[in-house]
Image 1: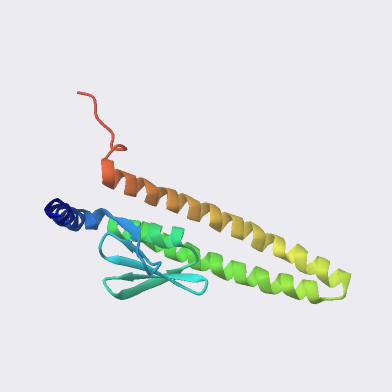
Image 2 (image 1 turned 90 degrees about the horizontal axis):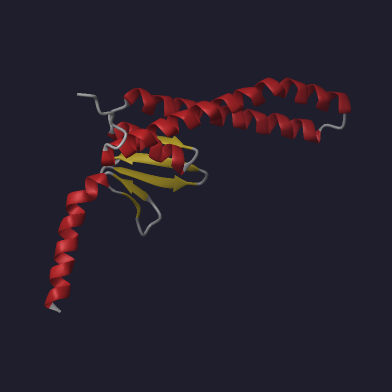
Length: 158
């Protein structure tokens, strides 16, 4: 019994020491990151709180967590790009959904064809935004890995 209590005390003290480095999902299904960030799912969006203050909503946990990593590593331009690109992508997705729905409800084949022709530019824009977001997420992953192990740091020749 004493061993178990001693082990529990040791584990709890170690968790307190590494909490600023942890990203984990709590019992309520929320993500907690670095001891300061909380990601809460609200319908189809993921809201990020930093020390209890609302910092924005994202379309996926992947983007929300990438934003937290960028903000934690003080990469403000990256965090701003993640939020802006995600917002733009949401707008393009909503626009596409509405226009495709309009075309599907139409009974005139020429109208459908015209709508789908006009949507080609928006579809290209959507792919471009997704590609840029993927690059931002990859950069956030780089900063996260570098923060843990410094394996990606370059060594110089002496």
